[in-house]
Length: 361
Image 1 (tube, rainbow, N blue to C red):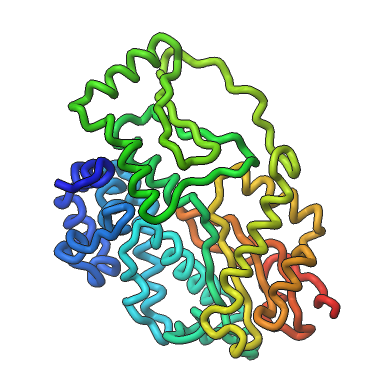
Image 2: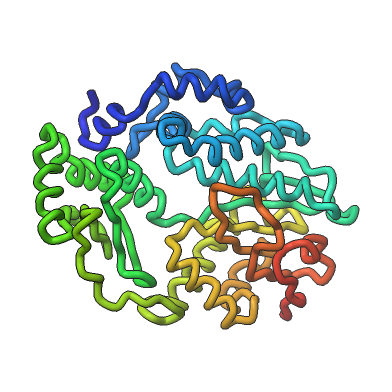
């Protein structure tokens, strides 16, 4: 067994028979992986392969028909595009799932669009190249997730213990978790009480039955995070006012900061400065309330990127488009927002989100 509490819970809750069945049921996924690889490739801080954890739990819960069927179809499409390399699926980290899926969703959306053809994967430089109305364009994909991967991991493990755990944060306010080895220690301390043979969980259930809610002690290092067990019969009183909206607590500042950081993190990567025209497609993996703030903030800016973000991008990025897209459906290129183009004849402008005029000098 593993050395850390969350590692032990992961090991207890991966059903390798279900994983084996899943690899056979979804052959386009299965041909890129074997059980030995999935069992041995379990990097810190999550101690599980992104596919084995999800395949086991989705097959168990019956959700595979939604999530795994989508992934299977996207891999099948991705393989048919020029330049495909199965290594794109090989980053084993739990959090890499969102980046892998986003690349596949983008490639699929590009290939389905009637104005786009010759979509190809690139082994060096940006992720994809495509021709839009006969004009070449380079596409870079990026998932902006901050602490959301760690948060989803916590939710996943808690669901294995009880479906009535709630993970709460004050909406539109900064929420954060430790990173790196600090996250390993945080998760170990958070889940250690649950390894006592069920006594701690029974105490939480008894408390929740009396008061409607039993709080779990959140270790130091988290910001704006509350975990509790609810009782399905005894309802706890509602929390204090938690309304979201631009500026309610963090609002506009958070969204602008997210946009700036997404551009900052990618503008000097993958040789974008030498591949033009290019476009950065960002999927914001954010809690629902932050997505609401994203929509409101972008509406405030009339669908344009804030000037501070435009200045950051210039010279490296020719266009950027932001999405808040889920893991359960294919992508529509028109669902993006905050399009900005620094080139008057950028070929991608006509097919992404709301097309803005070229930015001035």
